[in-house]
Image (tube, rainbow, N blue to C red; front, side, top):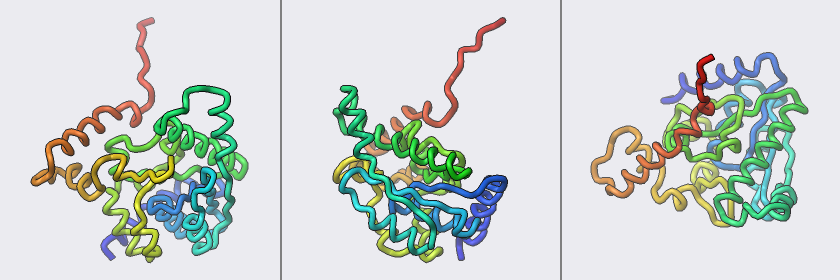
Length: 238
């Protein structure tokens, strides 16, 4: 297995970081990133210590998230976030665009995950991969707000390869990546390029790639610096 040692490292990381608590909480979308975290967490902790929270907006499908939970035998709940999101829209005028509403949805999901984590004495397990991390393709204080990030050092293409080795169902591996922030949203349509192209660029393989794509990736990397660190503080001399 190409990823055997890497799998063991991630399992040890999850086990060590959750050691003094009762396990981990995962937001289960049925996407490959949350799925692989669920599989690795069960291997590391056992199914009794892994809990899934499926958080659709209205009519979004929950089938893939449920498939993961049932395949692994972990406890899970389904919480429709539409009433919470809609209440924000009713009270304030700031969420009328796809991006602002999508970020709101991610932050509502974060609140639910931490509510469950506090209730169950567990850590929130992040699902962001290196490709997303490099270009800031996550919501600040949303899916970027977690306790640990077990796969933030793996490119998306590596996550897919590892999923094959773990025996994750093919329909989840080939599923179009999406944060499910609005109807029909997919990562690659929103970004303007696919993950295979992105990973080549991030690894310095730029031959044959359009200049506008290279510039887009570079702008995303530079523009997302504030998402990847604690807030800057003005240092004042006493």
